[in-house]
Structures are given as structure tokens and as C-alpha cells.
Amino acid sequence: MLVAVDCIVFGFDANALRILLVQRALEPEKGKWSLMGGFVQPDEGLDAAASRVLNQLTGLENVYMEQLKTFGDPGRDPIERTLSVSYYALLDLNRFTPQLSDEYHAEWFALKKMPALIFDHSEMVAQARHMLRYKASMHPLFFELLPPRFTMPQLQALFEEVYETNFDKGNFSRKMLSTNLITKLDDKDKSGSKKGAYFYKLNRQTYKKNFRKVLHFIPNPNHLI
Amino acid sequence: MLVAVDCIVFGFDANALRILLVQRALEPEKGKWSLMGGFVQPDEGLDAAASRVLNQLTGLENVYMEQLKTFGDPGRDPIERTLSVSYYALLDLNRFTPQLSDEYHAEWFALKKMPALIFDHSEMVAQARHMLRYKASMHPLFFELLPPRFTMPQLQALFEEVYETNFDKGNFSRKMLSTNLITKLDDKDKSGSKKGAYFYKLNRQTYKKNFRKVLHFIPNPNHLI
DNA sequence: TCAAAAGTGTTTATTCTACACCCATGG
DNA sequence: CCATGGGTGTAGAATAAACACTTTTGA
Image (tube, rainbow over all chains, first blue to last red; front, side, top):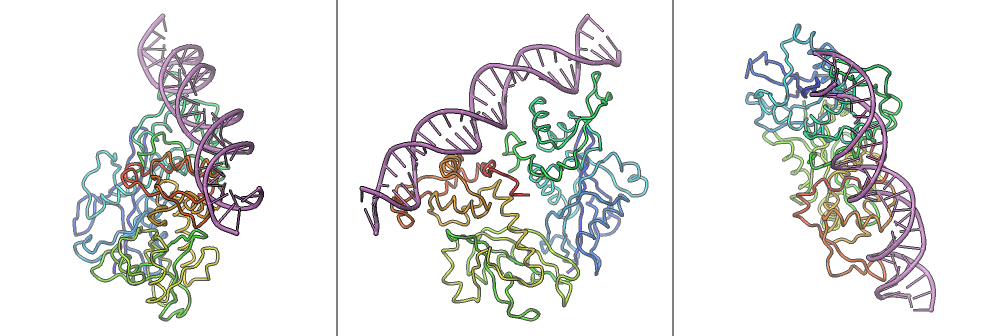
């Protein structure tokens, strides 16, 4: 049985959650949009395969990545029975955009405007989205999607995108601060408004310790169903 | 590459969380305790393979089952490169105990007294346990582990086992009732105490709707890390 | 009648929520 | 000087936690 890995790569750019897609280079379905994938090598672990595949696309290492689910319906690949172990990755979109479009034929798509994908890749994306909500309600993974310095409105916008809801800014900010996960910095980002919004950074110590503090963050947990 | 499924089967018997293990019938590691597993057939989906394997062991169908994770380290099986797609299952232990020991060489072990397992099966169990806590903090899966009629002290004991903590019975009962997931019945279970404890049953309608109501149930969420 | 387990009540502290208000500044 | 987005304050509701109390009944 053939075994492949496929990566669902999420990014965020202040307006929308985005996903990284590539145009498939080989038959079948050549030219269509697809997740980034590749076959697992004979002496390669699954995590290693996923990292390698992502590295080949973005040139990056140490990207947050986690196994999502394995897809193995007999008919999912029309040519040959292929198992796909899917992984999702979160990264700060800003850092990589330029080198991406130059070296590889990859593109960021807003999740809401995603094209049709080959095989069962759309299903993979749907599950990854679900998992993102799920995990993020328990673990502060959002910082993987933001630049090292970010503002409260930015962070709130990300939450609102992911949970497709709106938060009261006052309550959001207080709750977030109460986790001790982030630290306020001295300077402001003036690009978004006249007053300017303070920058914050992730507090890596408490990040490790309070890895579960984000719980109780989502007002109506039915979003997660 | 060979592809197998392995099932982590949980049960609960009022005293302890238990796990179902079998004595391996073939080399390598013949005679040692292992998870229930088998190879995926050429035209068989992964979920179907897991159900079949569990059915062969317990004779049961419609058991709650979910894919956990795929294990694929190159060296995990010493003989040949084998991928294992692991599944965890939850079932009401009481219903199946007798037929199990007769037809198959399987045994329930208390999680705390589990023997050493072959390959990476212990790691699978650890991850399944973690997942059980994780998911159960969001979804009311516990009813899969209980008989159709159960008492509040039973339910509380199950929670205390899974989260390795203790709850105040008053608060526990109120919180549980407030989810509307369960309905009080008229008769009592007198086996556990002189006074007797009322039976409850799962409310299947609200179970579907309020599938996320269990959240906020665990007092110290650090258990889930 | 008493011990043991089930179940109820109540007080207090804490956290949520909604919403009004103040602040800073570029145009 | 005012519109706009950022940030703070606060009253009232809702929830959680702790623990004392009542009920039931077999031994």
C-alpha cells in the first residue's frame, strides 16, 4: 500500500485565515489545486516526512505541525490504493510569503474563497479547521499564526475569524491578559488606527506552564461541535 | 508498506477504568500482551478494518470508536515496516465480559495494573488515555462506558477515575443535571448502599444538541495537558 | 439506633457580560 | 475639533466552591 503525507498549512494576515495550496505537478489531476503532499520514504518516520514536505515547499524548519488524521478509503485515489496521513501546520504568514511565490508554485487562499481540491483534500481541510477550533479552545496555539509582536485587536480578529463570532473587546482583552500568556510592550502599532494599539509579545515561560489556560475562552462553545 | 489497525478498548466497572488486551498469537512477540489488531484488507476502509477487528474479538457491532493517531516509526515493528492506524473504543464492560473470556483469549486489565505491551502499544494506550480526557472535557462520551441505566455516584466515580481527581458530590450532581444530558428515573439501585441511589438515563435528544455542554466540568483543567 | 452513603441547601467568592465611558490623534 | 478605533470601569447576573445539613435504611 502506498503511504503519503498531506499538509494543511494555515496562515493569518489580519483580514482572513488563509491556507496554502499548490498546483499539482503530476497526473492524475495535473494542474488542479491540492494540498502539499508527498510519499513517505522507506526509512522515514511520518512526522519527518511531513516536515520534509513542508520544508520543500516553504524552505522553513521548526514550523508548528501536528498529525491530524489518516485517510484511507479504498477509492480515495483513483489510480492506486494510497493512504494519506494528514498534518496541519500553523505559521506566521508574513515571514514566508515572498520566498513562496518565487521558488514554488504555491499560493495562499482565504479559507472562504478556497477552490475545489483534488481527491478528498477538501475533507481534510474541513477536518483541520475543526481541529484548529478544537485544540485552540484548550491550547494557545494562535501565537503560531501571529508575528512575534502583535496587537490586541489583531489577536481578537484572529479569534473572531477562527470561531466565526464576535467578542467584546474589553472582555476579550481582560480575559486574555488574565492568562498571563502575553506581555504588553512599550510601543504601539500606528498602522491600523490614529490612536495606535500597543504591541504584545508571547510570554514563553507561562506559555509552557499555562498551556491549558485558554479554556473558557469561547463564549458559546457550540461553535466547536 | 504494511498497514494495520490497533484498537484501544476502554471499559469501566465501578471500580476502575479497564482496557482490553489479548495474548498475541503469532511471532514476533508471541504470547505477550498486546492491543487487538489486524491488517487492513485490500478493499477495506480504515474505519471498517477497525470495526471488523473489534467485532472479531468481542462479537459486537455499533461500538463507539474513533481514530486516534497513526504510528509509523521505521523501527516500530522489528520485522517489517508496518504502519499502525490506532483507534480507541469505549464500551459498557458489563455487557461483554462473559462471551469474551470464552471465545477469545482476551482479558480486561485495570489501567493502573496494565502489563508491558509489545512494540509501541504502551505509547498508544497513553495517547488514548490522554485523548479520552481531552475529548471527554468537551463531549459527553462517558455514557458509552456506562450501562443504559446508571447512578450519579457511578457517573461521578467514572469522572474521578478518568481525571484522577475528586469532585464534591453536590456540585457534581447539580452541574451534571444542568446540562440536561440525563434524566432521573423512578427506581433506585440498592446494591451500593442502604439508602439506594436513583437511576438516570441518557437523554438522547439533548445529547445530540448539547454535545459540548460538558465543558467547564473539570475543576483543574491542568489534568488535560 | 447508629453508621454509611445519598441527596439537598445555603453562603460566599469569583467570574462573565454588557455596556457606558474615556483616550489619543490624523485628518 | 471631531470621527475613529483603542482602551478602561463598573454594576448586575450567573456560576463555582465549600461545606453543613437532612434523608434513608440495613445491620
